[in-house]
Amino acid sequence: MTAALSVENLEVVYHHTIQVLRGLSLEVPERGIVALLGANGAGKTTTLKAVSGLLPLENGAIGGGGIRFRGERIDHVAPHRLARRGIVHVREGRRVFEDLTVQENLVAAANALAGRAAQPDFALVYGYFPRLAERRRQLAGYLSGGEQQMLAIGRALVAEPALMLLDEPSLGLAPLVVEEIFGIIARINAERGVAMLLVEQNAMAAFGIAAYGYIMESGRVVIDGPTARLVNDPDVQRFYLGYGEQTTEVASFRDVKHYKRRKRWLS
Amino acid sequence: MSGAIDWLLLAEFSLVGLLSGGVLALIALGFVLVYKGTRVINFALGEFMMVGAYLFWTANVFLALPWWAALALTLAGVAALGALVERFVLRPLAGQPVISIVMATIGLGAVLHGLAEAVWGGANLSLPELLPRKPLLLGEILLPGQVLWSFALAVALIAAFTAYFRWSKDGVSMRAAASDPVTAYAMGIDVRRTQRLTWMFAGVTGAVAGIIVASMTSLSPSLGTVALGVLAVVILGGLDSIAGAIVAGLIVGLLESLTVAFVGGQARDLVPYLVVLVILMVRPYGLFGTRDIERL
Ligand SMILES: Nc1ncnc2c1ncn2[C@@H]1O[C@H](COP(=O)(O)OP(=O)(O)O)[C@@H](O)[C@H]1O
Ligand SMILES: [Mg+2]
Image (cartoon, rainbow over all chains, first blue to last red; front, side, top):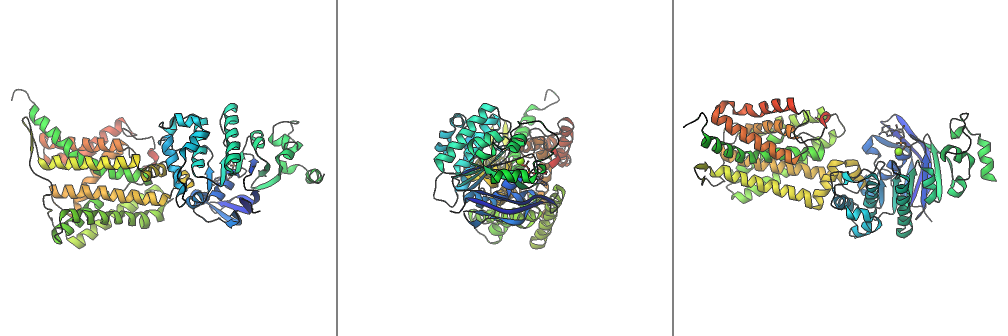
């Protein structure tokens, strides 16, 4: 079966000079949740922007490799067309339209249905996020951070997506709110069959709902595997889950001796 | 007369000034639409007015079409002009420094001015009087019919645009694209299309204002200079505030009228700039605008 998304040896350059992705490859199966983790500046957001076609709007360009959505090449497709084909990007920092009401944000998102027979199902969004229903006439700028994140996900839901790209939905939110939102993300995945590529700094939260994980550093994947295996990996625990011995010897994951990792994958 | 001030005269000139500010508010709306929608200050808006008025003259006077057909043709013409400008002047400049884009709209204004002179000549033409002259008597205050009707037209058009932006799906999309174009793209909004629509609307508001002004005065290639004074005050209102634009238009109208009454006709054109100077010293971010001054 073809994957919902497959990224092969992707290279991305900003301003023609700054290379940020260096041969990144990953796959998201239909209906699956895949986590993409990594430190600040690793290139996670850049990866999502490449998939959703936003890169050229931010002076970025694909310099090599390719991106396929359900088997078809989609690099160089305009972003609004990708949204209309079912790829929606929930951007880092939520990016709600602050001077539009909650309802108007959803109406704007219904543009993604252009060219499809579907009518926007706002009731579906308000069903997943009852708190948005109470605030449907309020300006989005006055919502709390958690509510704004709900609205950002709700906008994506209006687009009836096949693939959702979620960029740090936990950013700046209290643990209880994160738990609530991740629960709803998992439900959307299960009930609507939406494939998801979930970028996170909060590895624990991401591992809680993702089946598979990729960890990237300086523009490439350094380790990947089923999350059940990643959570038990001592190196992953040390660098991304924040426990294990405190060490300053190894500055980065890549410095961990290669054979050591290899051995464990083979065992 | 008992005191130094003639209260009746003051009231009459104030009312007439506010009413003639309606058209100025329409011009101001043209600036604000384009700024909100594309972050560009359209220095050629005055020339859009002028071209609109000439197109109307051509259709209505030269070709002797009825006024409604002439108006329809004119609006189609300026909408097309707006779309062409967006496509061939602004889109190639996307991502360039603000100053290059500003220079491009100034250059565009000069080109349109030159073209109008080449096509229609520099002499004053006159449009038929489109608005009824019958004045309205409010007690002892006399309001000229044209001023009254121009105000009514401007209010109707501004209300229509406001309703469109508030409630129509395209209006909502245009506001979304104006507030965050990158995110709008990711939501499936064709931002190029909303930007094109924005320029077409600005052309339409400009042309209507141009026709009104030309029918009340006369038509020449420099018809659009009035727009610059309005722009000066719009910047005060905050370039991204429609409410600010309306207030700005009314203030310019009021002050111009009072200047004509109490100082003299020559001082009139200076008024907007004086107002700007004074207010900028008090409120450098404008009366209503966001603190986004580096974009200017
Ligand atoms: N528009 C841009 N222009 C130039 N460099 C950029 C741009 N966006 C991101 N970068 C650079 O690319 C690198 C990766 O950024 P990003 O993809 O945002 O990382 P992450 O999301 O993993 O924190 C960073 O070094 C960042 O400075
Ligand atoms: Mg990021």
